[in-house]
Amino acid sequence: MKTAAVWRPLIYAWVFPSTMVGLVGAGFAWCQRGHFQVVDGVLEVTAPNVLAVLSRGSAVAPGIGISAITLGHVVLGRDLEALQRTRRHERVHVRQYECWGPFFIPTYLWLSGWMWLSGRHPYLDNPFEVEAYAVDWCLPDGQEKEEAQG
Image (tube, rainbow, N blue to C red; front, side):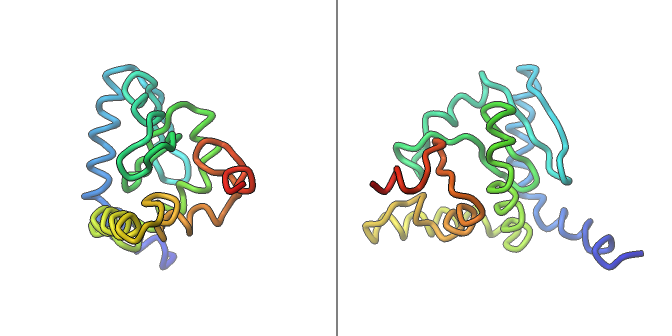
């Protein structure tokens, strides 16, 4: 048996508290007849009526429409195109969850607060997002980085 196969169940258990939050969102999507698919061991979910709030941004990402959000091993997306477009970015967050486990969400929120208090952007300057955006050049709303900074 490969060493990675031995660790995989432990990694899923380590991340499970955060995954449970994602599964609650998936439950709401299921009630709305959302679309479900498993890609690379991650449950991807869309349901426009339930997840429309993502397009409005959040307290952590003011003024930025969110295409998808990762909660443990669950990715909630606005639609299938958003899931495909953000897959590499969201997989970075999956790996971050696998490293930080149940401490990811509080650490993410703490770092966003720290960025805000430091006069920086609570979302775009969050180190977790900086790492995830390093895998591609596309910002949350589909703009290229040069356009957004110009």
